[in-house]
Image (cartoon, rainbow, N blue to C red):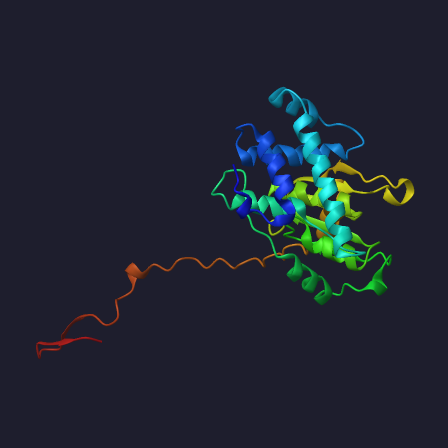
Length: 270
C-alpha cells in the first residue's frame, strides 16, 4: 500500500484506486501492464496485448477503471491550469511508484513540468508557430513532457520523441495521443541509432478527430529516415605504405661496448 502522504494531492484518488486494484501484484509490473493496455486502447487494430492481459489477470476490468480515472484526472487538471495546459499524470505516478524503492520494472525520474515549460520556450516554442508544421524532436523523451509543453504553447506542429526505455516510450505515446500531438514515439538508442519499436501518433486526428497509436517499422519512421539521410558515411582511410621490418641483428648496436682500441687496451663506447 502506497501511503497517501507520499502521493501528490491531485493523484491521491487515482492512487487509492490503483492500490485497490493491484491485488498483490508487483506494483511495477501492474503499472507497466496498465501502460500496455492504454497503448492498445488507442490502436485501430489490436496486436494481442488485450488477450495476453486477459490470460494473466482474468479480465480487463481493473485496467478499464484505471483508464477512466486517469482521463477524468487529466481533464480536471488541464482545465484547472487553463486553456492550452498540459498534465502528465502517467509520468508523475511513475515517479511515485519509483520512490517506493528499486524495481526491475521502474527506475527513472523526469524533468519537472515548470522546467519543461521553460525549456520549450527557450527552444523556440511560441504561439505564433501554431499550425506551422514545425518539427520538434526529443531524443531522450522520458514520459514526453517537453513535447507536451511544446504542444501546449504551439499546437499543430509535429512532435517526435525517442527513448531507450520501453515503458517511457509507451507513456510518451499515450501522453501524445491524449494531448493531441501528431508525430512519433520511438523506442531506440538515440546515440547508436539502434531501433527497437515505434508508434505513429494521431496520424488521422485532423481528418477524423480520433486519437490513434499505430505501430510502425524503422523503415516507416520519420526519425530513422531523417537520421539516416543526415548521417555522413565514414571517411575512407588512405592506404598505408608497408615498410619492411629492419633486421637490427645485422647492425652493430649503438651506445654499447664494441671492442678495444689499438694496442692501448682502452675500451671504446662509440
